[in-house]
Image 1 (cartoon, helix red, strand yellow):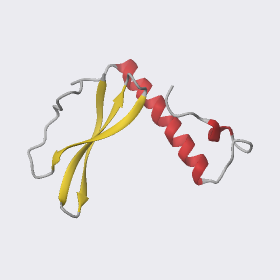
Image 2: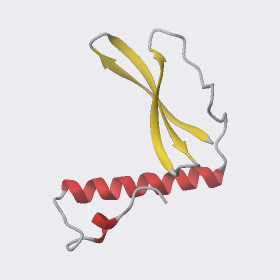
Image 3: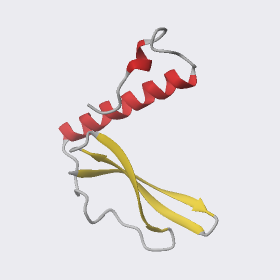
Length: 93
């Protein structure tokens, strides 16, 4: 099941588009998808996505995001797995 987490707008050379960041519980990963142009009316319903996220799925999404952040920080600091355990984090479960 895919659970919407954040909707945002991204400007491009040909106009702006609305994007959705979601948690895919089957893949235990985050993803994003273009959901339409910014000039179209928005809304909280996105076809193919759940309308609510249960607390346990939200916690799973939080853990995946935590792993991504830790890995990104380790890479940004130029650390190797020999120097820092966060560099060994696998994204997803």
